[in-house]
Image (cartoon, rainbow, N blue to C red; front, side):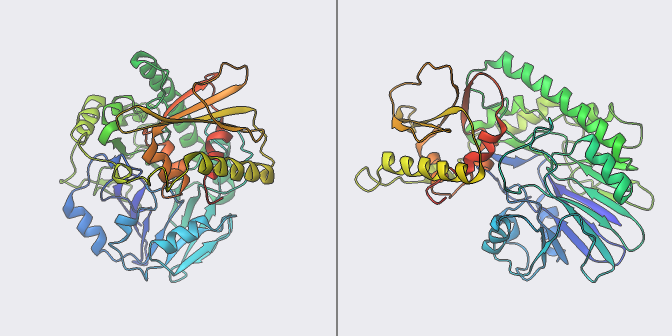
Length: 443
C-alpha cells in the first residue's frame, strides 16, 4: 500500500491491487468561505491528482473541506463514491448534487468488499458528540471514519474528523486489529477561540494554548491505544483568509514539533503536500515541491495574511429589497421550524439565542431573539439581562441570508470564524451548536 498526502484530509491511497482510493478531496481554492490549504498545494500536484483517475472516492461527511464541489469537478463523475449508511440522506444527496451518481452506502462496522473485491472496508459513525466525550441529543449522523484491509494484509485506519477517544481507539485495535498506518485528527474545527467576541487577544492566546494542550494529550493517548506503527496527523491543515485572516494567529492546531514530542520516536509521520508513505518499509518519500516544511506559528499566520484580500463568496450576495424579503417573518418561520425539529428530536435546551445581523458597514440590521425551549421570537433592541444561558451569534446579514436559505450550512460556517460568538455563561453547549443547523427556512 502506498499513501500519498495531498491536503487536509485528502489522501491518494494505492492498494496492492493497483486500485486507487481518494479520500475527502479538497485541495483547490477556499472552502467554508475563509479556509485555505496550508501548506499550499502546488498546482502541478493538483494536476497530478486530478489526472490520477481514482478508482474510488471516499467522502467521510458533508463539510466542504471533505466534500468540495470545486475540487470534485476535476474528476470523472462516473467514479464510484463510498459513503457511510447514515441516518439521513444529506451526504448522499450532496454527493449526487456534486455530479456523482454511482454511490455506495456502507453499513457501519461491517466488513464490506470494495472496488474489485479483494480489499475490504469498515466504516464507523460518530464516536461521541465532541472530543471531551460529551454525548449529543442531536439525532443525525455526521462524521464517519474508514478502516481498510488491503489484499496484502496491510491495515489502515483513517479517523478523519471523528471525535475519537482512547477507549474507542483501544476497541478498534482489539476488534479490528492494530493498523499499520493511521491518520488521526489533532485539532478542533470550530470558531473557538478565534471567533469569541468577549475574548481579548490575551484570552484567545490562553484559550489556544489550553486547547492545544488538551488535543495533544488526546492525540498521544489515541496513538498509544490504537497501536499503529506509523501515525499521520491529518485534518485541520488550513489557515483563515479574507476578513478572518488576522485570526489565524489564534489557530489551535498543534505544530508537528509539538505532536512529535508526545509519541515514541519514529511513530509520527508528518506529511506535506505530495509526500508518500510506503506500508512495506514505513518510510516517507518527500516531495521536493512541498513548501513550509516544519513551519511555526509565525510562518503560518504570515501566510494567512497574504490571503487577507480574498473576498468570501457570501459577500457577493445581493439581498432582496425590504418589500421583497421580510426578515422578521422569515426568522420567525426559521424559529418555528427549529422548534418543531427540536420537539421531534426531544432536544430540550434552556438557553436563549440571539442573531445579531450586521450590515456590511457594521451597523446593526436586526437583533432577533428566539428561545430554544419555547416559541418566543422577536426583534429586540438589546440583549436582555437574564439568568438564562444565552448565545449571541453576530454576523453579516448577507451571511445570515445564506444560512437560513441553506445556501451555506450553519455547522460548516461555525468553523470559519466569520461568525462572532458571545456566550453567558462561558460554557460550550454542544447540542446548541450542532442543532442550529436546523434553523433554516427549509426544515
